[in-house]
Amino acid sequence: MPPHRLHELTDEQEPTPATTRGQRRAPRRRLARIAAPGVVAVSACVLAGAALTSGPAPQAEAAVPDRILQAAELQRQTTTSAAWFAQSDVRAASDQRLAQERAAAEAAAAAEAARLAAEAARLAEEARAQAAAEATRNAQRDPRSVARIMAADRGWGEEQFSCLDSLWTKESGWDYAADNPTSSAYGIPQSLPGSKMASAGADWETNPVTQITWGLGYIENRYGTPCRAWSHSKANNWY
Image (cartoon, rainbow, N blue to C red; front, side, top):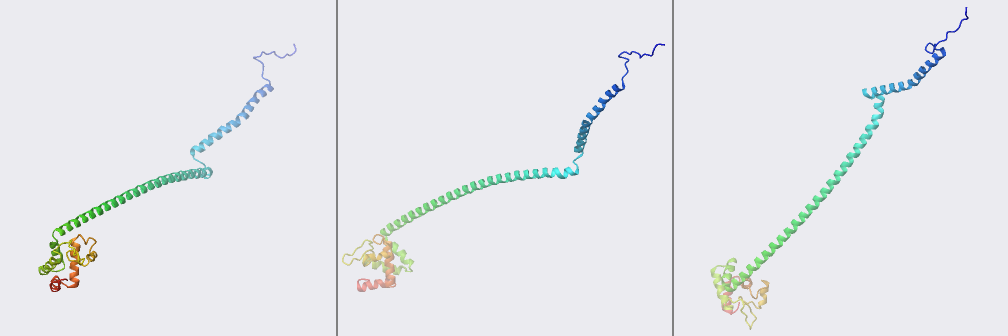
């Protein structure tokens, strides 16, 4: 019987040695060991995503959001403060501009009021001067009528005015420029000297009203009434 021989096997029929099988299985274990960290990482990401999706853990909510909220609050306060100061500057500038405009308007109004007051005073003075000049002209033309009115203002009626008319007709003929060269008596009442009538007005030389005012005051103080003054003049030729 021929000795027992190993069958010659072809490559297709070659059995897989144990060592070979072991070597082929080894890569699977190494791949499993290599893949394990990746799987763990992916699992951690999945778990983290699930955790983020479902909401923060109590520890994260207590730690991280506080800092975020504090930073956000600080940013909000900074922004609010900056906006407030900006608005305050705008309000201050606006208030200053309005105050300047108001002061300018008030100054302009005051200047206009002063101008109008000065103009009114000027017109009033012109009117007064014109009225005085017209009164002087009227008195120069008709001093008797002026004296009649002024005597009535003192309470002297027609009888007293009649005495006054007789007295001053004798003294000056009612001429406001009558000048007695021998005595320096002057004017309608023949004041001696004429400068005494300056107490009634600076225009005593030309204004019959000033002369009559002084003359009526002199008669009242010295004699009481025109008729008493006339009686003294008739008796003594002066009064």
